[in-house]
Length: 295
Image (cartoon, rainbow, N blue to C red):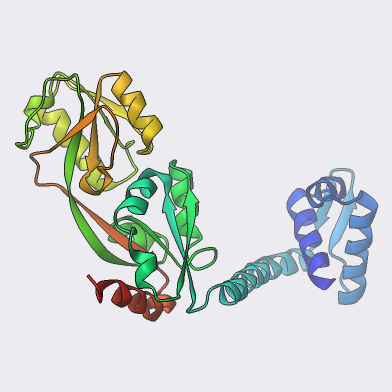
């Protein structure tokens, strides 16, 4: 009950209105008023001045607001950690992965993982393909998920307060629609792509893909760079219909209709990593040992 009063107090302080706070909390204005009065009674403090312009914090109210704001953050973090501890045991691993690379990892990298875990469960949490989806995935490591898999990036790990361990490296390939005359097995040069429309990940999705985009613009200035958010049957078929080449990682080469695949002549390679909280390092190490033991 006391925590409900605190949340109500914080909402009124931020919105300067009982009615606005009531709307946010799905309460009546009278219910909000009673909670504030109960908090003032319990603390012996006058927290608000009621004016025609709304509810203004008193000096005591402002001091309490600043402290309770931090306390509420700690409370939320404590609940999240307790929920994590309840859900995540040595027997269950929750792995976050974006739809951008999900199909490739499920069909290749993680194909035999379940058989190697010897009773340990692996639960996959899928996220969308946008930058906001990526932000959500990384923020939920340590709460909703034990770890997440994405392109290896130490700076990205630092941004979200995570550790990262490299797990694999793949060369880049070009998906070529069958009716485009770029057949063969030898690597394709950047210059050879100059006359074509090429689909790649959106700018800002991964630094290594941004670097490849810049290299393309320098070596194939006439190429038209398009965006592909994720790699799946639907998006690849769309590219085929539009006569677009597709930049992709080797482990993404699954059975896409209407495409052949050729390696791209570039020094750039794509590293993938597992992102995790430092506290879960032993769990991650044990997990990787189980997989590597039978490789």
